[in-house]
Length: 273
Image 1: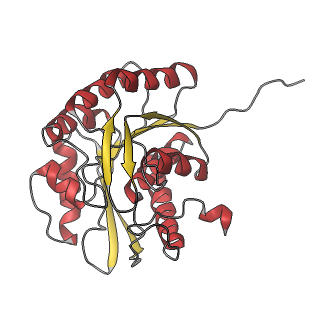
Image 2: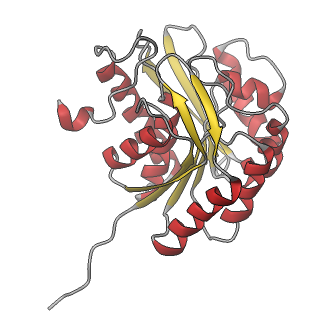
Image 3: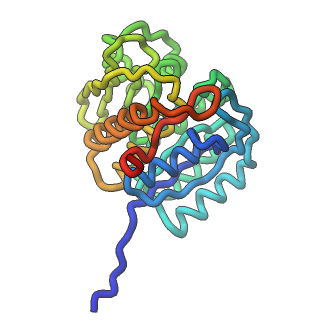
């Protein structure tokens, strides 16, 4: 009799909460589940948030690192997604804690500003993020404003994105870069992925969906990349599948009305419809 039990693909999210359910840990766990992973979490901040705004209440740093160790010592992780880390102290603590474990698939979403426009990262922590935490990640997923902050330069148009992605990689320790083009105004939406492991640029084209339901898109995309890496996909394939997932989730969620501001995407479109 074969008594060997099956195992899950495991993904850990390190991020803040979102009681409105569209972003943060809640979006991460929904995405992990929708993309075929067993999701775990370490909450870095309790957040007072809805579709119109956000206020962050930090969790003590030692309690954050305790959550990470508790999950990794017991359940483990095939991939880790890192989201909002609001301070230099927290960034360093997460880096030092993760360095004890051998996790190749770290996906970092350099969250700095919420969809509502509220700041989520202390200004002095940007350099700590760039020089200390990003270099241990396998891939980062900045949008245009986040890339501009990390580079200290403005990004004017679509054709600049491949070189911007390469430059970000060079300045951030050789990390792969999935640069999101949503903040540009071209009708054709073309994200750019620079795979630093192969030095290859891959454009990721999708139709622009005109909707205000974009709350949590960054959290969702980075968690999808982590999910597909956890399931054993190559880096290129994980990014392609994640891009397809977020595009479909945005399109499916565009027709819904939730809240008075920026609504969420439809994480479970593949199961509900």
